[in-house]
Amino acid sequence: MSKRIEVRAPMSGVFYRRPAPDQPAYVEVGNVVKKKQVLALLETMKVYQKIKAPADGKIAEIVAENESPLADGDLILVIETL
Figure 1 (cartoon, rainbow, N blue to C red):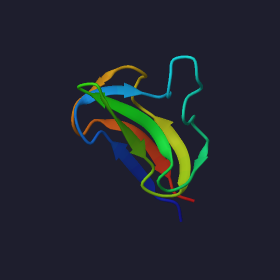
Figure 2: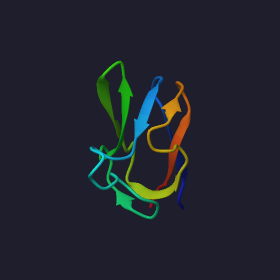
Figure 3: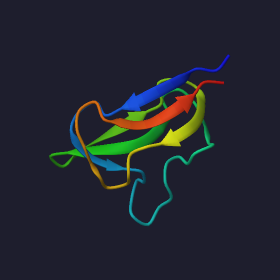
Figure 4: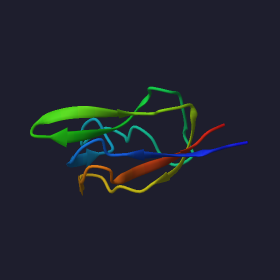
């Protein structure tokens, strides 16, 4: 039975779906991910924190918009466990 896991911002910052503007996004909806795989970046005061998958699963939904400001606890994406 699959379970939905919400991945939330651990702190306030700017959300980035890609490692650089000219590179593809870390993940897209439907991608299968492994625990601790990098899903996105969160930049706070010029420090980039990697947002990692808390469990194996499939990306069910990406809520946060690329380059948008997020507050602590904002929903970033949803993973459906396999």
